[in-house]
Amino acid sequence: MTCYRHPDREAYVRCQRCERFICPACQVEASVGFLCPDDAGGTPEQVSRQRARALRGAQPRVTLALMVINAVVWLLQLSPFGQRVEIYFAYTPIATTIAPWQMLTSAFMHGSWLHIIFNMYTLYIFGQVIEPMLGRARYLALYLIAAFGGSVAVLLFSGPTTSVVGASGAIYGLMGAYFVLLRAIGERSRQLTGLIAINLVFSFLNPGISWQAHLGGLAVGAAVAAVYAGTRKAEQKSNQILGLLALVAALLGLTIYQVSSYGIL
Image (cartoon, rainbow, N blue to C red; front, side, top):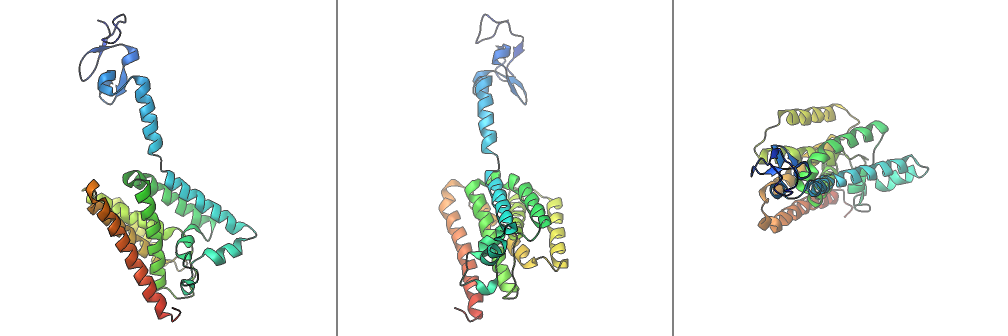
Protein backbone atom coordinates (compact mmCIF):
# COMPACT_ATOMS: atom_id res chain seq x y z
CA MET A 1 0.00 0.00 0.00
CA THR A 2 1.54 3.24 -1.15
CA CYS A 3 0.44 6.88 -1.23
CA TYR A 4 -1.41 7.81 -4.43
CA ARG A 5 0.66 11.01 -4.67
CA HIS A 6 3.98 9.45 -3.60
CA PRO A 7 4.21 5.89 -4.95
CA ASP A 8 7.56 5.41 -3.21
CA ARG A 9 6.05 5.95 0.27
CA GLU A 10 4.09 3.45 2.31
CA ALA A 11 0.65 4.55 3.47
CA TYR A 12 -1.79 3.04 5.94
CA VAL A 13 -4.41 5.80 6.15
CA ARG A 14 -7.28 6.31 3.70
CA CYS A 15 -8.89 9.60 2.74
CA GLN A 16 -12.31 9.75 4.36
CA ARG A 17 -13.92 10.86 1.07
CA CYS A 18 -12.21 9.14 -1.83
CA GLU A 19 -10.66 6.31 0.26
CA ARG A 20 -7.30 6.56 -1.48
CA PHE A 21 -4.22 5.82 0.62
CA ILE A 22 -2.29 8.87 1.80
CA CYS A 23 1.10 9.16 3.49
CA PRO A 24 1.69 11.42 6.52
CA ALA A 25 2.88 14.26 4.25
CA CYS A 26 -0.48 14.25 2.43
CA GLN A 27 -2.80 13.86 5.39
CA VAL A 28 -4.93 16.95 5.98
CA GLU A 29 -6.64 16.82 9.35
CA ALA A 30 -10.39 17.43 9.23
CA SER A 31 -13.35 16.98 11.56
CA VAL A 32 -14.11 13.62 9.93
CA GLY A 33 -10.56 12.29 10.13
CA PHE A 34 -7.97 12.81 7.39
CA LEU A 35 -8.50 14.01 3.83
CA CYS A 36 -6.23 13.88 0.82
CA PRO A 37 -4.99 17.18 -0.68
CA ASP A 38 -7.45 16.89 -3.59
CA ASP A 39 -10.48 16.64 -1.30
CA ALA A 40 -9.17 19.09 1.29
CA GLY A 41 -8.41 21.81 -1.26
CA GLY A 42 -4.64 21.78 -0.84
CA THR A 43 -1.67 20.24 0.89
CA PRO A 44 -1.45 20.35 4.70
CA GLU A 45 0.78 23.45 4.47
CA GLN A 46 -1.59 25.21 2.06
CA VAL A 47 -4.67 24.38 4.12
CA SER A 48 -2.89 25.57 7.27
CA ARG A 49 -2.14 28.93 5.62
CA GLN A 50 -5.75 29.23 4.42
CA ARG A 51 -7.06 28.55 7.91
CA ALA A 52 -4.65 31.11 9.39
CA ARG A 53 -5.83 33.76 6.92
CA ALA A 54 -9.48 32.95 7.67
CA LEU A 55 -8.80 33.22 11.40
CA ARG A 56 -7.14 36.61 10.97
CA GLY A 57 -10.07 37.77 8.85
CA ALA A 58 -12.53 36.70 11.55
CA GLN A 59 -10.86 38.75 14.26
CA PRO A 60 -13.13 41.55 15.49
CA ARG A 61 -10.84 44.33 14.33
CA VAL A 62 -13.48 47.06 14.35
CA THR A 63 -14.45 46.07 17.89
CA LEU A 64 -10.82 46.21 19.00
CA ALA A 65 -10.37 49.57 17.27
CA LEU A 66 -13.44 50.95 19.05
CA MET A 67 -12.06 49.72 22.37
CA VAL A 68 -8.73 51.44 21.68
CA ILE A 69 -10.47 54.71 20.79
CA ASN A 70 -12.50 54.57 24.00
CA ALA A 71 -9.33 53.90 26.01
CA VAL A 72 -7.47 56.79 24.37
CA VAL A 73 -10.36 59.18 25.02
CA TRP A 74 -10.48 58.02 28.64
CA LEU A 75 -6.78 58.80 29.01
CA LEU A 76 -7.44 62.24 27.54
CA GLN A 77 -10.17 62.73 30.14
CA LEU A 78 -7.60 61.98 32.84
CA SER A 79 -5.08 64.39 31.35
CA PRO A 80 -4.73 68.08 32.25
CA PHE A 81 -7.00 68.77 29.27
CA GLY A 82 -9.71 66.47 30.61
CA GLN A 83 -12.17 69.19 31.52
CA ARG A 84 -11.89 70.76 28.08
CA VAL A 85 -12.37 67.36 26.43
CA GLU A 86 -15.57 66.80 28.40
CA ILE A 87 -16.90 70.27 27.57
CA TYR A 88 -16.41 69.76 23.85
CA PHE A 89 -17.35 66.09 23.51
CA ALA A 90 -19.86 65.15 26.25
CA TYR A 91 -23.44 65.44 24.99
CA THR A 92 -25.76 68.13 26.33
CA PRO A 93 -29.14 68.38 24.52
CA ILE A 94 -29.32 72.17 24.73
CA ALA A 95 -26.02 72.39 22.81
CA THR A 96 -27.17 70.17 19.93
CA THR A 97 -27.31 72.97 17.36
CA ILE A 98 -23.88 74.39 18.18
CA ALA A 99 -22.12 71.06 18.85
CA PRO A 100 -24.00 68.32 16.95
CA TRP A 101 -20.92 66.09 16.94
CA GLN A 102 -21.46 65.51 20.64
CA MET A 103 -24.28 63.09 19.77
CA LEU A 104 -21.57 60.68 18.61
CA THR A 105 -18.43 61.72 20.49
CA SER A 106 -20.14 61.28 23.86
CA ALA A 107 -20.35 57.56 23.07
CA PHE A 108 -16.55 57.36 23.35
CA MET A 109 -16.34 58.97 26.79
CA HIS A 110 -16.87 57.54 30.27
CA GLY A 111 -17.40 58.76 33.80
CA SER A 112 -15.25 56.33 35.78
CA TRP A 113 -12.90 53.35 35.58
CA LEU A 114 -15.74 51.01 36.44
CA HIS A 115 -17.88 52.54 33.71
CA ILE A 116 -15.34 52.07 30.94
CA ILE A 117 -14.23 48.61 32.08
CA PHE A 118 -17.79 47.28 32.18
CA ASN A 119 -18.66 48.84 28.82
CA MET A 120 -15.53 47.61 27.07
CA TYR A 121 -16.00 44.10 28.42
CA THR A 122 -19.60 44.05 27.15
CA LEU A 123 -18.52 45.54 23.83
CA TYR A 124 -15.96 42.79 23.34
CA ILE A 125 -18.40 40.02 24.31
CA PHE A 126 -21.02 41.10 21.80
CA GLY A 127 -18.65 42.56 19.20
CA GLN A 128 -16.65 39.39 18.68
CA VAL A 129 -19.89 37.59 17.79
CA ILE A 130 -21.75 40.23 15.82
CA GLU A 131 -18.88 41.68 13.78
CA PRO A 132 -18.11 38.42 11.94
CA MET A 133 -21.84 37.91 11.35
CA LEU A 134 -22.35 41.32 9.71
CA GLY A 135 -18.96 42.24 8.33
CA ARG A 136 -16.95 45.26 9.39
CA ALA A 137 -18.75 47.99 7.46
CA ARG A 138 -22.26 46.96 8.50
CA TYR A 139 -21.12 46.35 12.07
CA LEU A 140 -19.59 49.84 12.31
CA ALA A 141 -22.76 51.35 10.83
CA LEU A 142 -24.81 49.51 13.45
CA TYR A 143 -22.60 50.78 16.27
CA LEU A 144 -22.63 54.41 15.19
CA ILE A 145 -26.34 54.55 14.34
CA ALA A 146 -27.19 52.95 17.70
CA ALA A 147 -24.97 55.50 19.47
CA PHE A 148 -26.80 58.27 17.60
CA GLY A 149 -30.13 56.72 18.55
CA GLY A 150 -29.14 56.73 22.21
CA SER A 151 -28.36 60.45 22.03
CA VAL A 152 -31.66 61.16 20.28
CA ALA A 153 -33.48 59.40 23.13
CA VAL A 154 -31.57 61.55 25.62
CA LEU A 155 -32.61 64.63 23.66
CA LEU A 156 -36.26 63.54 23.66
CA PHE A 157 -36.66 62.28 27.20
CA SER A 158 -34.02 64.05 29.32
CA GLY A 159 -33.72 67.62 30.49
CA PRO A 160 -32.07 70.06 28.06
CA THR A 161 -29.11 70.66 30.37
CA THR A 162 -28.46 67.00 31.15
CA SER A 163 -24.90 65.99 30.27
CA VAL A 164 -24.27 62.35 29.33
CA VAL A 165 -21.26 60.25 28.40
CA GLY A 166 -20.70 56.56 27.74
CA ALA A 167 -20.77 53.86 25.08
CA SER A 168 -23.81 52.22 26.68
CA GLY A 169 -26.25 53.40 24.01
CA ALA A 170 -24.17 51.82 21.26
CA ILE A 171 -23.59 48.67 23.30
CA TYR A 172 -27.29 48.29 24.03
CA GLY A 173 -27.71 48.67 20.28
CA LEU A 174 -25.51 45.60 19.83
CA MET A 175 -27.66 43.72 22.34
CA GLY A 176 -30.86 44.63 20.51
CA ALA A 177 -29.30 43.77 17.16
CA TYR A 178 -28.07 40.40 18.37
CA PHE A 179 -31.53 39.53 19.66
CA VAL A 180 -33.13 40.41 16.30
CA LEU A 181 -30.46 38.57 14.30
CA LEU A 182 -30.93 35.43 16.37
CA ARG A 183 -34.67 35.58 15.83
CA ALA A 184 -34.15 36.10 12.10
CA ILE A 185 -32.24 32.80 11.78
CA GLY A 186 -34.69 30.92 13.94
CA GLU A 187 -32.66 30.87 17.15
CA ARG A 188 -34.05 31.60 20.60
CA SER A 189 -31.93 32.89 23.46
CA ARG A 190 -33.64 33.17 26.82
CA GLN A 191 -30.30 33.95 28.43
CA LEU A 192 -29.81 36.97 26.17
CA THR A 193 -33.36 38.18 26.80
CA GLY A 194 -32.78 37.86 30.53
CA LEU A 195 -29.47 39.73 30.29
CA ILE A 196 -31.09 42.61 28.41
CA ALA A 197 -33.97 42.73 30.91
CA ILE A 198 -31.60 42.75 33.90
CA ASN A 199 -29.53 45.56 32.39
CA LEU A 200 -32.62 47.64 31.63
CA VAL A 201 -33.97 47.21 35.15
CA PHE A 202 -30.57 48.23 36.52
CA SER A 203 -30.63 51.30 34.26
CA PHE A 204 -34.01 52.42 35.59
CA LEU A 205 -33.15 51.80 39.23
CA ASN A 206 -29.79 53.58 39.19
CA PRO A 207 -30.29 57.37 39.08
CA GLY A 208 -26.71 57.90 37.86
CA ILE A 209 -27.32 55.98 34.63
CA SER A 210 -29.04 57.38 31.55
CA TRP A 211 -31.83 54.89 30.88
CA GLN A 212 -32.83 57.06 27.94
CA ALA A 213 -29.57 56.33 26.10
CA HIS A 214 -29.84 52.63 26.92
CA LEU A 215 -33.42 52.31 25.72
CA GLY A 216 -32.83 54.43 22.63
CA GLY A 217 -29.72 52.49 21.65
CA LEU A 218 -31.50 49.19 22.20
CA ALA A 219 -34.45 50.16 20.01
CA VAL A 220 -32.35 51.66 17.22
CA GLY A 221 -29.91 48.73 17.23
CA ALA A 222 -32.85 46.35 16.88
CA ALA A 223 -34.20 48.47 14.01
CA VAL A 224 -30.85 48.41 12.18
CA ALA A 225 -30.67 44.63 12.59
CA ALA A 226 -34.23 44.34 11.25
CA VAL A 227 -33.11 46.19 8.12
CA TYR A 228 -30.15 43.84 7.77
CA ALA A 229 -32.30 40.76 8.33
CA GLY A 230 -34.82 41.86 5.71
CA THR A 231 -32.19 42.61 3.05
CA ARG A 232 -29.81 39.70 3.29
CA LYS A 233 -29.63 38.86 -0.42
CA ALA A 234 -26.87 40.33 -2.57
CA GLU A 235 -29.38 41.97 -4.92
CA GLN A 236 -30.98 43.75 -1.95
CA LYS A 237 -27.90 45.78 -1.06
CA SER A 238 -29.38 49.03 -2.39
CA ASN A 239 -32.55 48.42 -0.36
CA GLN A 240 -30.40 47.86 2.72
CA ILE A 241 -28.62 51.18 2.24
CA LEU A 242 -31.93 52.95 1.66
CA GLY A 243 -33.33 51.36 4.82
CA LEU A 244 -30.42 52.62 6.89
CA LEU A 245 -30.64 56.09 5.35
CA ALA A 246 -34.37 56.19 6.12
CA LEU A 247 -33.66 55.25 9.74
CA VAL A 248 -30.98 57.93 10.08
CA ALA A 249 -33.31 60.46 8.42
CA ALA A 250 -36.01 59.61 10.97
CA LEU A 251 -33.55 60.16 13.82
CA LEU A 252 -32.48 63.47 12.30
CA GLY A 253 -36.12 64.48 11.98
CA LEU A 254 -36.74 63.73 15.66
CA THR A 255 -33.62 65.69 16.55
CA ILE A 256 -34.72 68.75 14.59
CA TYR A 257 -38.23 68.53 16.01
CA GLN A 258 -37.05 68.40 19.61
CA VAL A 259 -34.37 71.06 19.23
CA SER A 260 -36.92 73.40 17.64
CA SER A 261 -39.02 73.06 20.79
CA TYR A 262 -36.17 74.70 22.69
CA GLY A 263 -36.62 77.77 20.50
CA ILE A 264 -33.00 77.81 19.35
CA LEU A 265 -33.44 76.93 15.70
